[in-house]
Amino acid sequence: MNTKLHHKGRLAQTWIYLGKFLRMFIYQNDWKVLPMAAIIAGVVTFVVGGNLFVTQEGTLTGSFALVCVCIWNGFFNSIQVVCREREIVKREHRAGLHMSSYVGAQMIYQLLLCLAQTAVTLVTCHLAGVSFPAQGVVTPWGIADLGITILLITYASDMLALMISCLVRSTTTAMTVMPFLLIFQLVFSGGFFALTGFAQKITVLTISRWGLDSVCAIGRYNEQPMVTLWNTIFQFRDIDYMGEKPLLEIIRMMERDGSRDDFLLWSGTYNQKENFAATLQNVQHNWGALLVMIIVFALGAMIALEFIDRDKR
Image (cartoon, rainbow, N blue to C red):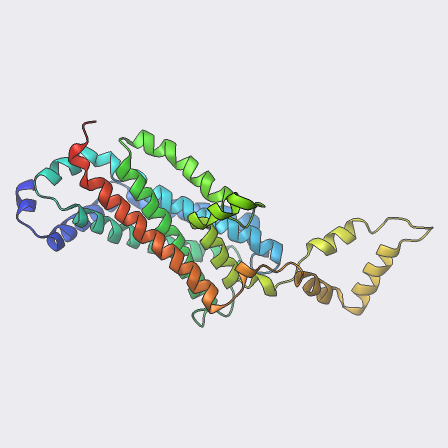
């Protein structure tokens, strides 16, 4: 095989390796990432899916959980794919393998894998009863916008893991690094944990920040009711003031005249976030940031492998 690779061009090598990865998907049980994606998405949507895209609190929590699913899927796809065959790649590079062809084949294969995982995630969410946005921001369909976002988050995470797999020396190191990458993405998402100052600026370097902003914008977070204020008032409904329970009376009055929903929408207007605005410019900006990350990580993987012959480990 090495002798043949020496005489083949970059495009031919790309297709040779793509075929190899597809065979590995079937015969080395790499297909297991698909049922795993379904299980993870099912568990998450079972817990938080009921209020996803229904209330502001449910949308933020559910979107954060969905982004976590995508990042986990992407990391798990490729965190070991290069380092587990590092010696083979090194040997074939010396025999004429172009690293651009190898990484290009990995990118195509991982994209196909991420497309399949996106479909699995959407189907799982649908079966779990998630109410998808009816209208999209970029496309006419909310589920299409959401699918594109899930794909970009998963693929960007996949390319980051691929770059790490090209840099580290063993699968053990790769699996040790992965939890730290995941924690970094979750902590610096910028939407779930309160960050200020320099910590807030770090969020622009994370996949989770752009993914969360995109999902919340597509889910029309700013147009949804907020239930926290109502729940707080309801919690203190039995407080006695001068022999009366004014909060309880207010609650009963609002329930009688049907103004509760209006109150929830009104309270939501005071909890809107600019980065969650359902505008074409905002969503396209988020998608663009994820695309830039995909390109940067892929180039990083390619550059790392170009120096593989210097690796004496």
